[in-house]
Amino acid sequence: MHELPVTQSILDVVLRHASANNVTKIHTINLAVGEMSDLEDEWIQRYFDYLSKDTVAQGARLKIERIPVVLRCEACAESFQVDIKQMEDIVCPSCGEKKFALISGREYYIRNMEAE
Amino acid sequence: MEEIKLIEIKEEILSDNKNLADELRIRLRQEKTFLLNLMSSPGSGKTSLILRTIAALRVRFRIGVLEADIDSIVDSEKVASTGIQAVQLRTGGFCHLDAPMVTRGLEAFDLTMLDLVIIENVGNLVCPAEFDTGAVRNAMILSVPEGDDKPLKYPLMFSICDVLIVNKIDYLGMSDFNMQALKERVTRLNPDITIIEVSCRTGAGIETWAKWLADEVAGFLRG
Ligand SMILES: Nc1nc2c(ncn2[C@@H]2O[C@H](COP(=O)(O)OP(=O)(O)OP(=O)(O)O)[C@@H](O)[C@H]2O)c(=O)[nH]1
Ligand SMILES: [Mg+2]
Ligand SMILES: [Zn+2]
Image 1 (cartoon, chains in turn green, brown):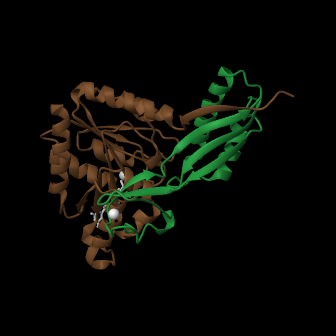
Image 2 (cartoon, helix red, strand yellow):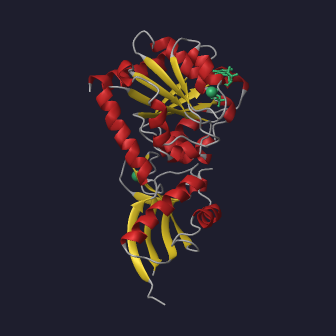
């Protein structure tokens, strides 16, 4: 899977912000990842530990918040959350339609970091 | 010890790739070259569909093919045997193509001489879905033997594609594949997707597919 390039990308972004803010040590990085993505949290942390050696991000913990999948009904505009494992029988809870637009669930976002 | 402070970042993780993909799209628009990103599981029929597409559209458009099959040149040789320029990308075991890899791959072509470049992405329904290649359109193939439940397992792939080609429909009679159920599942994830049924073996549906693609390319070339 592609945890490695994604992790490299996270590291690049946080190091750029670290040097802009004169950071000497990063403790925590808060990420938001949509449930549509099947990144493995554990692998991201392992790759991160490996890639961040000898940088100010060494030892930082990645906290990944999962953003639920939210659909909006094309017919009545009702928005509702769905379980990604049960995409099979989705109908709009308010009108019964079966056509939707994806509102959230594809995020890949670095929110912030806790650093000194 | 210094105080711990919260530093706002608010950036997309794959923003570098996204930016490069957008840059590539702008360049392709200037060069007037339509880039199609073709994705599927291994063996669904990417190379077969590319060969069919070349046969159907080569009189109308100048075509090139970017091959990303993992460490094999079998597919690019098949394409090259048609006389169409095929470039083999060395993906080094990578599970997907990203915009920088595609940009580098395209350097081997003279884009001013091409109307349409088709990327045969790495055979995988997970990773290629996450990486914008800079293509103008995303296409995926699902073949009948893979089953009609794939949208449930790989929702992201189905949701990012402009067109779904259901290949190997010559197998329909021999399987419990439910086309109606498939279409419902796919449309739920992606109401705007076009679904085209084909068989690269018998040629059924190829005309419909070729027309869809030709209309897209012609529209793009007109600007
Ligand atoms: N019966 C049948 N077989 C097909 C059809 N399309 C392709 N095949 C066969 O399926 C096999 C795989 O086809 P390819 O075109 O090589 O598939 P691919 O997606 O390029 O495969 P990789 O590049 O290895 O991932 C070949 O043996 C094809 O002859 C079809 O419509 N019907
Ligand atoms: Mg192939
Ligand atoms: Zn509704």
